Length: 476
Image (tube, rainbow, N blue to C red; front, side, top):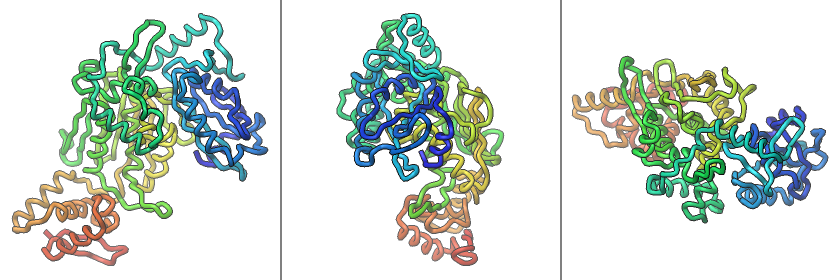
């Protein structure tokens, strides 16, 4: 969260989804009551170091703030304090020359309790549920609200892909080598990630739909959800059928990688520098879109997830359960996970940002990448429309590759794999720079320079204009 975003939050008084707490050198005793209440209701934001009247006389003591954040994360993962556990990731934000801690808490698909007590949330604050009727009503509401929480008691560990589980642990390890989940055995790993539940109303216990969608083998997922599929399609020339297509039916951790590779194959990755760091605009935008397609899909809806690259732009669609239907903008978006445990797991493996950050990245980087604003609609089918990137050629990569290959054969010219990749990238975007080629192709700069020299020597490539304003021209 940025300072400006926090300033916007501080304009609002405490409400059902917002709580301020004083915290100079220690975590307030009522923190987990509020965390529990937010998880059980609609989620919300807790700001530590701010008074009820929204003033910040001290903030949080800088000498202990890092340790407090670690303590909050550790305690949220401790079933003695919060059960079922829900791993929180506090953020430190600087404001008014002071430091505060911001904790974003999503709505959960489970009923949580702290110190043996169940809390709910109203406009007046946190309140304990003491009657059986109130607690049963909460369980009923949760069971109807989230499909990811459905238990499949006959699914066993062998129905999940062991290589995907290991991949996920490595991703977590790369993000945080001291992550508390990494020391657990397989069953406890799934319990702590809220992917293995015990339903105290039905007495069922087992892996959930969330566990299946994250790690399931393809045949098991298809048995449970026979209609589930993802279609990625390129329609730039053959608009009646397709130029290229990818159909996926497996778990979303593996499918995420397949979709990102599909996009990298068909979309340019224009060079962009933010501060002193080079970033991939394509990855910044589409890692959020792809994660959203997979993480926030309503899995019990038969509508397929679709990703299309067309002459009108890139369109992503997925079945949805809208919170409030209509266009999504920076001014009105709501931090509402459709599948909170799947969303939380994607955050832990570094495949998604904290709730809400993804929308901000899409709106921030799309105008730089395309010259235009994105369009996002939260309806029964959640739709994201991204205009075509600047300099994008409305020909499929497959067609470009075939055209270049045919011309090379006709002229008896042989290129190495790297030289051919450079030629295809230039055909896609004649104004691409050497550094953009380095980033897009993942090649060392010296290799890109060598390939360009060889392409010139073989009469395949010439440069028109200067280094800054010129462009490349394939001469075959």
